[in-house]
Structures are given as C-alpha cells and as structure tokens.
Length: 362
Image (cartoon, rainbow, N blue to C red; front, top):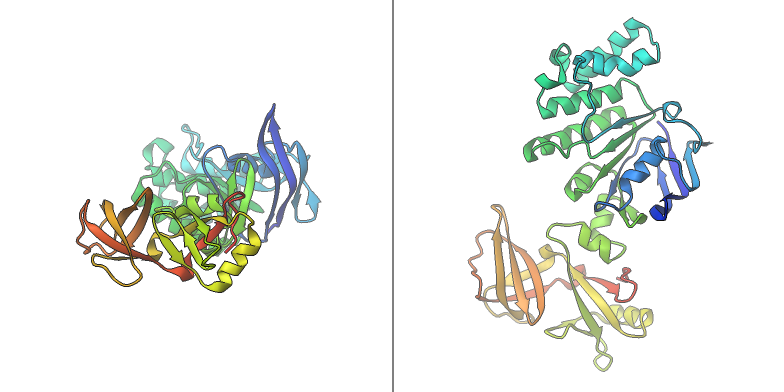
C-alpha cells in the first residue's frame, strides 16, 4: 500500500489553469473519490498522479519519494479508463497478461496471476474470448483484471462505470467496493456521479474550477458541507438554499422575505459576530422539511408548485412568494399542483452560509 500526497500542485495548459494549488493527502489503502462537474480538474489531477501529465508547480509524493519526474511505468500505478482500452484482436487472457509480458515475467507466474485474478472477478470462463464477444460489464471486469494482475501500489480509475446501464452500474459499484475491501490497495477514483461517490468512497474530495473545495467522509460531505457549492452539488434533489437577513430588532429571527424563521439565541449570537451585514444564505435538505396538508402551529403556508413521485418516495416543491422549497415526503401524500400546503423547517438541521463568501457558518 502507498500513501499519496499532493502539495501545492498546479497544472497549466497555456493560459488555462486546470489544477489550482491542490493539497491532498491520500492515506495507505484509502479509497478516495475525486468528485465534481465536468471541467473541474479531477481527471487532470488523476493524470498528474499517474505521471501522464507533469505539474507546472508543486510536488507529488508516493510515500517518502517525490515522483514529479518519474515516468508512469516507474510509479507502480495501474489505470482503468472510461473506454476500457482493450485490444480487440487479443483474447481476454492476452489482454490481462500483456503488461506482465512486457515486464518479461516468467510464463508460469503470468499464468498464475491471470488465473487468480480472473477467478477473483468471476471471468475465468471468458479467458479465451475476445472483447467483441463480451458484454459491457464483462469488458469492464477485464479492464479491472488487467490492472489487478500488475499488483500496483495505486489504482487510478477514471469514470470506469460511465458506459454501463443503470442496473449494471449499481451492481459494479458494490463489486468494486468489495474488491477494494479485499485488496486494500490505495485507490483514486474520478466521477461526476455523487451517488457513486457516496456509495463507494472512504473519503471524497469535491472539486470545482481546479480547486479542492472540501475533503471528508461521505457523511461529513453530506451533513456538513464546507460551502454552498458542496451543499448544492452533493445530494439529490439538491439542498434548498434561500437568502435571509437576521432581524436586528427581534434578534433571533431570520427574515427570508416571504416567511420568517425563528432561530435559537446562541445561533443568532454566532451570526451577529460573523457578519456585519447580517445577510446570510439558509440551506435545508428536502428530508428536513416537514410537510402538512393542513395548517399547524409554526408551519408556513405555501402553494404546491410541483409533485414528483419516484415510487418509494415523492418530492413536493412548494412556492412561497419567489422562494421554492422542496420537501421529501412518503409517496402516499395526496397533493396536487395548485393545492395549499404547509411546511416547517427542522431548525436543528439548517445550514447557514455567509452570503458574500458562501462558506459555512453553522
């Protein structure tokens, strides 16, 4: 197992900064996911770790060695790509054995490694076939097998499940996670799919515009996002966020314009100290919005704007003035567009961000 560290790493392509001053510590045996939208720098970061790109500045460490100038073949990494990159004229066995033959390993050692890996991945019966004779899921396993037989110190995976259908992706997510638990090889996995990240990762690094916005466990990323971008990017549907001003006269009321939110005095004190403008962004996850078809004390009146039933649960979008609030509810809730409905925010679960910097305060 290998520890990987990026220290103040940047990468320019001409005038374009693809990776911007990234600090990242990947521990021995960790499964870390680089998560973010297209163009955020996650694949470039992966390629920097692989040695396929050289950093413009900063240092990349494998354990106690700086590897900036090491060629990919000397880093003991193995990559699994989005398109699998299998050789169509070779059998599964030969695809898996190719790198071992390049390294001139004894043939009996090659036979042993390929056979054991194929057994591990459940593809031993496919060793004599060629890629065109395989399903997408089988090709993906072969690509994984080709990486595993090399016994690398680090696995690097660039959206390897993106070409699979939804059901097979869900299955392969579980199998990849189980595989990592067995091998315990340090793994860096790139995806824009937050579900993939939440299900598979030990740690997640959320990226935007070439910068790491937050590093944490899936639960930390979800329950305590560092800023508005992380809050809205992680979670589906995304977190409700609306502007509110702390009422100076009443002291413990956030005024969102269309409605008000009473907050505990200790939170109000923190907000007063944090911002002279007293202007904030309030965030709440849909599952933390309570919904009632009838008026109740402390609930806010609204109009049903949209109802989305997805089988095991439903999402109801409520409109109050210009503000839309999404609530997660049981599918049995009988509401239609245009109906009157009432909601309440779980104050213990609200997030408050500085309006100017968009960083989390509470």
